[in-house]
Structures are given as structure tokens and as C-alpha cells.
Length: 609
Image (cartoon, rainbow, N blue to C red; front, side, top):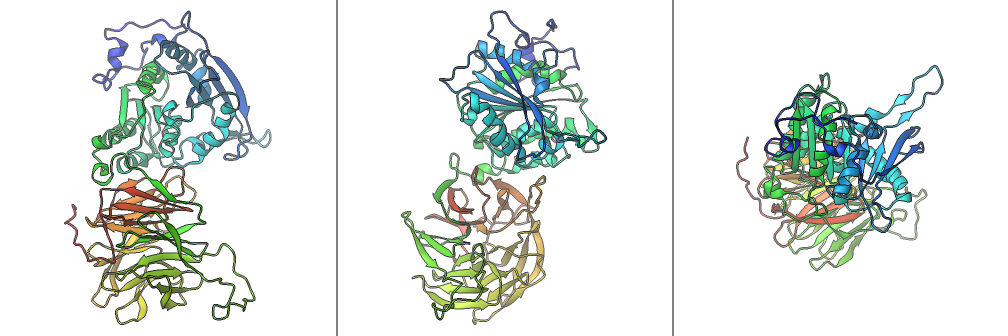
């Protein structure tokens, strides 16, 4: 048992908010009584196991331990805390001694009845005695993607839930880690705040091993999430080829404070180890669980990001249509109607202002000659063929539809009948109709933008794009903006007097997932606000760009849903954003007001450069 080290200042004062930024030397550190076994305190049980059946990380084997407090009763769901690099945290003579901390804080009421899951990183055993095992720690922990999240939720938590009842409420769940285990813990909560909302990291690896160096920027740009975060680091932490831990942790603190998160920290002078983190861990837990069971919430009003000017506090995504095959495009008109196309089913749906959903138009069976329905083509088309891509509302209320598999663009009258064909022998993806009647659409076959001019001629309007997907107009309708599904940029081009495009540039720089196998932003549908903002549907959510082409803000996609592929402003006041996400359609109230291409042009204010 360690003996307490007396200091002139009490440990509680050292941790207080006014003193939390004070530096301490690398030990010996004061021993919090909660880290020491206490007489009369119920002792929890540790159950150890091995897991070797992972589908997310195939071939790996790993040890784990489950801590069950004596106070746990099956009749009431316990809180949960997951710890990465778990076994070092439960060592009797280690730096952390978490079983003691849990025992004492649960007994004192400073922490709820909590089951602990202590998980080791995976190892792929060596193939033979002459070969080396594959150590998965960095692969699992340092990558800021969703694989480790899926592993915990789908493979490790079921092991706990098989024998113990744990709460499903995210406010009842905490996650912790040190070093690479720290960024893993933060990433899990960042990816799934609907599952974890209390985060503790010590000497966190927020640096450039597998993309974590971008996290502080994304924290600044992404809408605030309901997380409570505690950070610890020391000025003698690592400074090597991939980054400076001490600087990176301060950068993360600055980013969290900038965006209005509930965050606390203790800085010291220690190195890359668990000495300081273990010493302050009991107080970190006291702060992390303070006022439980009150909910951890976002604090948009405290954020210095774009959140207060773009988001409506308390408003989140609302599901309004589901069970479709794959929604590829969404558009709105001035009567409050929302049109959205099922890309694979060949259907265009109409959702009116009362919430009534109907099929507005159905694509004819491609396996039959449309001039003679009894005549069947010799070779059937694949069942998963993309039938409809983009749709757009015109200035007279007509609807333009890109029939990708048929290679043409058609115009539908307001009653849903086919009025005309704009183009054939193309592979149209996105489409937009300007207020003056000019229609632009992207042709993925030629990687160009086509137009139907006022004189009825269909022709190429602009070339030289590396790829073309979605398309929209700037709020003043002087620019045609084109997304590239496979590229990093949204392209900007200027309209000339005859409607053709000039000054084509890869202009708007999109954020992309840095640790994913597929690092494309997958930029697709777009819309614009009257204030000049460009909103782009991407894998990371709806990225909001200023006129100079910079992402200022990212609206998170609906949790546990596919990322948005198409977006459009609508509603009575134009402040409802609609988003097609896989087979579901969502809406969300914003403070931004949409600029509709079919409406009169609006000149936005001069941007800050």
C-alpha cells in the first residue's frame, strides 16, 4: 500500500478549476485515498476472459476483464465504463489501481454503480515459431474511423450484456484510455455520442499516426456533440516524427473550449506514462460523473464556432420517410412540397406540406419497349441498376429527372406526366434549373456539364472536370457549382451570357475521413443559403463552405444512419433542410434560409477573406 505524500496544497485544490492548469513535477504524486483499499468498503469482483472471434478484426485474440461492484443488482441496470489497454489499469501494483478507485467512489456515492470493461488491443498470433505476431494496437486505436466503435458495440459489449444488465443510456456510459487508448476512447464517443458521453484521456495521442492530428480541427468545425471530456498531459510528453503530444493535447483543449464543450484538464510536467494520470484519476472520475444522473448536453450558446448562427438549439434530425431502397436526390417547390427519388426503385415520391406521401412518378419497366409494353428486351438489366439520379424543380413548378440507366433527361409537368425530353445518350447524375429557365446537368460519361439553353438547344456547357456528380447554382446564380464524388473538391465555374461555363476551377476544399480505406469525401448533392453558404452532402455530414471555398462548419449526419447523398432547403420559410440518407429521408430546422435556384437570384454579402 502506498503512503500519502503530504503537500502544502491539498489535492482537491490542485484539481480545482482555478488551479487545474497549474503544473506539477513528475512525481512522486499525491496519493488520493480513493486509490487505496479502504476498510469496510465493498470489494468488486474481476472476471477475466479471452476473446478470439472478432469479425471486425479477424484473426485477433485479446484478453479482457469485467469489473462488477458488490452493489450491482440485476434488478437495476448499471452504468458502464470501458477502458482501453485495460489490464494495466487493474494491476494491484500499477499506476492506476482502478478496482480500488471504483470500489471507493461507488461506496462514497461519488460515482454510480458502474460495471467496468477492461479491453486489451488485439494480436494476430504468429504463424509459426520463426515469425512475428501482428500487433493491432495502433491499427485499432489510432485510426479515427468507425471500426473500433463497431468492435466495441457489436462484439465486446454483448459479452458483458450476456451476464450483466447495463444501461443503454449514453449518459450512463463512460470511456477511458491513455496514449493511443486515449484517442480511441475519444473517437468512440465522437463517432457515437448516442452510446458514450463521458470521456477521459491521459497523454492522449491526438497526433499524426493515423489521422488523429485532424481531430482538433474537426472539433472546431463540427457541430458540438453532447460530450463531457477530461484531458491530462505533461510538458515532457513525447515529441517525435508524428507530432508533439504536449502541443496536441493543448490544441485539443483549445478546440473543445472554442466549440463550447464541457471540458476539464490537468497539465503537469511528466512524460509519456501513467504516473500523473493514475494519481489524478480519482478526481477525474469525480468530475466526469458529477451531477449524475443529469444528462450531458451540448452547449451551443457557449460555442464560438458557426453553430450559434446556423443551428437551432435543441433541434436535431427528424425522420420523415423510411423503408426506401436508396434515396438519391431531393428537391422542393414553393408550395411546400418535397420531391425525392428512389435511385434503385425508379420512383419519385411527393411529400406535401401536410406530411402526406404519395408516388408522384414511376419509371417504366426498362425490360420492356415503352412503345409496346408487350415486347420484352432480349437481355434483362441488373436489378440493382441505378435508375434515377438527380431531380430538380423548375421555375414553373415542373420537375426535371435524370434517368441514369436510360441515358436521358426528362421534364415532368406538375401533374406527373412526361412533358419533354431534354437530352439522350448521356449518363446524367445531378441537375439544376435556373430562374431564367436554363437547365444544367452533369454527365458522368463525359465528365462534363450539359445545358438546355433558352432556345431549347441541349449542348455541353463546360468541360475539364475530373469528375461530376451533383450540381447547383450560387445564390446570385452567376456560378455553377459541381461536386465530384471521387475527388477532394467541389468545382466552381462562371456562367457566360449564353449560359456556357468559363473559369472552371477545383474550388471548394472538402474534408474527407483520413483513416478510412476509402478516403474520398463522396461529395454529392448540394444547396445554397441566401447568405452565400454552400452546403455539400458528404460522408462526414453536411459541410458548409464560405464563398472563398473553405469549410467553416460541418452539420453531423443523423446518428446511426447512412451519410447524406442529397440535400435541399424547403419549408414555409425556407429554413428546413431535407437530407436523403440511404433509404430514409430526414429534415432539420436551421437558422439559414435557402436560396432556391428556381427563385429570383439573391446577391449574398461580401465574404470575409
